[in-house]
Length: 112
Image (cartoon, rainbow, N blue to C red; front, top):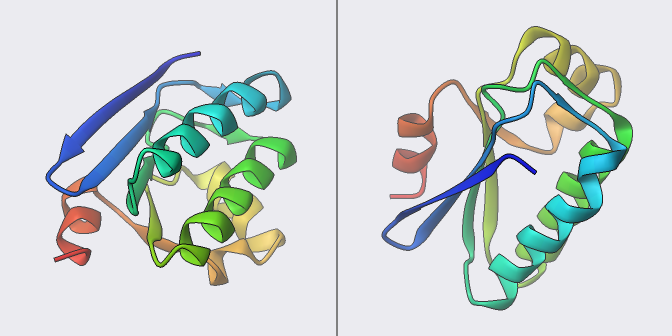
C-alpha cells in the first residue's frame, strides 16, 4: 500500500498515495491507523490529495477511525479532497462529520 507517515510534533499525517483507494486497500489502511492510535497518536490528518476515488469500504475505514480516535479524546482531519471524493462525501453526508481542509498546513494549524 502506498502510505506515507509524517510526524509534526503531536500530530501524525497519513498520506494516502493512491489514485483509487478501494476495498483491497482498506484492511491494511485500517491496521495502520489503529496501530497509530494504539501507540498514542490522538491528532491525525489523513491526506487524500492523490486520491481521485475512494469506495465505501475505504470511507468506512476512515469513519471507524474517526469514531475510535474521538472516543479516546482525539480528533481527525481530512485534507486534499478531490472533486469525485467530495461528491461521495456529500452524497453520504460524511462531509458533515469530518473537518475538511484544503491544505495540510491548514489542517495542522487547526490543531494549534
